[in-house]
Length: 109
Image (cartoon, one colour):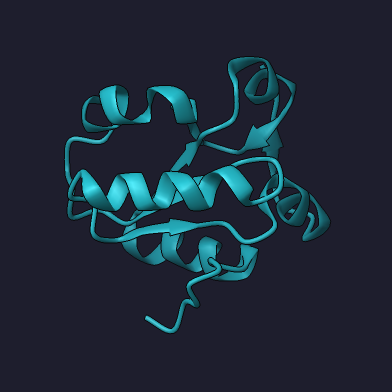
């Protein structure tokens, strides 16, 4: 709702997490995920998305917020997630960089 095709802003993503229990999926490589990711995000690398996403998120009605470093891979991931039946898949515009700029929580490890 109101989210542009280019993705959600960090503030819109936070609202979706708080109001609709959106699941954050980090599509970066495992080493990038370990170096820092959105607090609470689950790691499902883009290359494994089709195999692993359905197992990682059983409820396809939940909104998904796909995150990568800059927003490029998460846009591709969003298209894949929609093909898998996750109608409410969104990409975080600007990726982790935008999230950090907004001073939102990051986890490492």
